[in-house]
Length: 300
Length: 300
Image 1: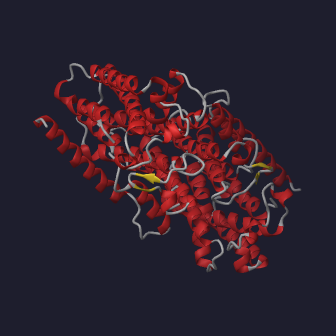
Image 2: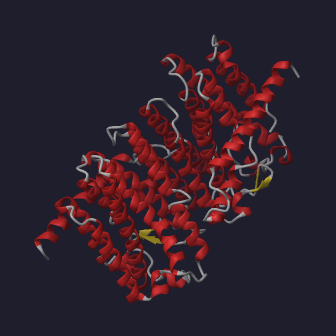
Image 3: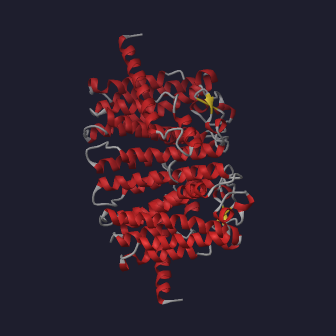
């Protein structure tokens, strides 16, 4: 392991702890009524996950010299949306999954109705945070941040991607269709994490924001391509969630459409494109570069 | 029918049409991908409902001399939250209902997964609207409006009330417990409608806002008490949703706890308290007064 990667591991570990602590304190206490709902929200959100979206928000925040006290709120809001989407995605009427982050899914640990409401309330809380704390010097800019997260979450973003995913099971898909699905389902929220992190800081020139956006789009898609590869190749124990479920459900993935080798190659191309977008930004962008490797080279 | 009530009917009818048109244009077009999701969102939101929350927002907006172009956006955001909550509430894991506004519920007309996602996306869209349009001269105040709706929707508001409702089925309940449940489940969003409508206009003195808040709380609870009475007494055909389901499910209601006559009397007391809060406000508050009657005297 190089000094560089040790330093990166340290950065990741420190922020994962910080995010965990922040989410702990932002969530309603488990003894507050309605207790069961609050317990389910905490169960779904705390104690697990790589926190990739928050890490991306912090890395983009570094680029824009953002106050980390602001970034941690924006990052938490994105993670709340992510957590709600997992709870709903695991429900019987969707993926009907029983395992997530090595634990029973929320509706298994609690019940379906509580999981449904916990997801709903996590979404509300995300927008509450984004409006409650001061995240930008200019309140108008902060309203744009709320708008950005709402659009990324909604029917033309994440929820829309899930709807396409749902319709796709068992049906053949072309590469452009697959890309459309994943750009929405996973990419939209990853992109929001990067852009919101940057918006907590100084205003970047439009061309820089465009390049950062391109980085975010490439890395969002790469994340999903690697997810497809891992689902096909890794074990349930390694993933902490049910492996091989895409193939079981006859779901189109990058592996089923391109094959495993080509899918890996595609992820590498996307990493290259993401890194190229950061060209000439020096040290300020080093965390973003390291995260590109982290996302593409991960094994779970 | 008095001239006054004819005028009120006219006001209600005009605004119901305006809200319908606004929601039509705010929702993604049905031919936009993902089509099925957008169709489900439109199905859940359009073509029905008394639009009580939007009407309250408009009435409160009149009190604060608000620009109706602003109020209609705030009112739409509240109605989006209301519509999403109905879609999720009707799901098999919750109330398992097949009829709503005289039509098959969303998951019957489409499917459970689509209904789940449509509800999720309607919630996102509510916050998107509230952040996208200029609703207050001061963006900081608008952020407070986002926060207000998010809090009213979340685990300490509407979703929390639904969680208590869920836990209550089959269990005996005291009057304070019942009140806690309904203040959250129905009251929170009705209160948000009134306060958001007022916040679209001039800044009201704190004492006036407190009185308006008291009006909103009384009328929110009255709405639910009347709902309980109608569920027990009216027919499915009149209501456009399944009648008698509270008793069937052994659910505590104001009728089961107080009896029908006492429940009606309680609704009248709440109306009186709501009207008293508006004392001395003259013509500016007449729509709010009429709506108190509309809510308590309604037959569906």
